[in-house]
Image (cartoon, rainbow, N blue to C red):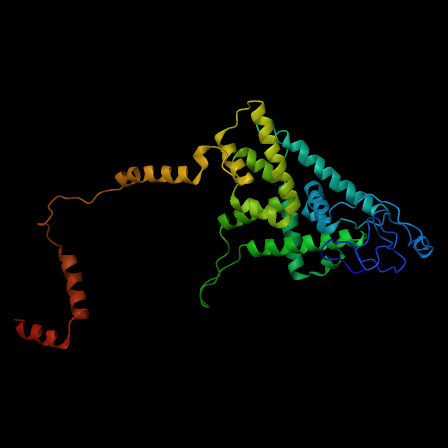
Amino acid sequence: MPTIDPESGYPVCENPACPGFGHYSHPNCKCFPHMRDGGPVHLAVYQEGGEVEPQEPLSDPQETVDHYVANHGLLNLLTKAGQSNSDKNVENYMNGSERGKKKLKSHMGNLLGNGKLNIDHDKNSVEALSDHLNSLDEDPSPLLNVGGQLDPVHATQIGATSSNAIEYLRSIKPMSQQPNPLDEIAPPTKMEEGKYNRQLSIAQNPLMILRHTKEGTLYPQDLTTLHSLYPKLGKSLTDQAGEALIEAKSRDMHIPYKQKQALSMLLGTPLDSTQTPQAIQAIMASAAPQQASRMPQPSKKGKGNQKATSAELKQLNKVDEMYETANEARIINRNKP
């Protein structure tokens, strides 16, 4: 496998006759057998002093992976991307990524307003992803085959994205607790499992972020998952959501307040004056006196004349006995009848 340039993500050309020798290869470099257009190694052109033909640039590997997941899901990336015996592995992979881009753009048209977003929670695929992650904890060897027969650039990126996703999901997975050695093992609560399954759902289908935004149920953890696992998709989704908002305002579309709140979180900026930090602090300050007035107040009846009960007196005597000194004890016993 050729050396990968860390900045560009492309293989470093090792052909002395190539103008790119010692640097990362130009797009579709014929010095490598498994680049975008495939085929055997073609060194004759360079050995004979031929010029490098201009090629279409390769798409960004991270962007390609992210949009592939948007179309096929994380489980497919871990188990099927580039795994067939067909010579069209690269073509199928790139087509899947392009369909992910189109799917994102299509859903953006219904993000705001009353249009329906056809993005549903697929419980079966989330459960299958969870089972696969559990199996990888026991036997991680299948990770050696992620990316299958794809070119080194995209196979490497698939491996990096897969490893990052697995580590992230493992880090937020609720675990059983045993505070002390003799305590019973307490399994995760239903609430903890529900929060984890929500993030699994976003990892499997990151376009669920759009559904949560439309329904006004977006949480900060959702965005952490999106940007941690799929940074290029997260940027594309945010940029397009901003454009959708501008389009909606130009058409005087009514945006419900809960959607404004979710969009504000998604875009990382307040969308109206009530969502600024100053406004939020003012609202909290104005609500504090009302909350204090609702709290039960101590009764003033009999203040200063209320006598302790016999049970309370006994408890006070016990406390006194615990803290009395030896001299105090002798004096008390001497004075007892």
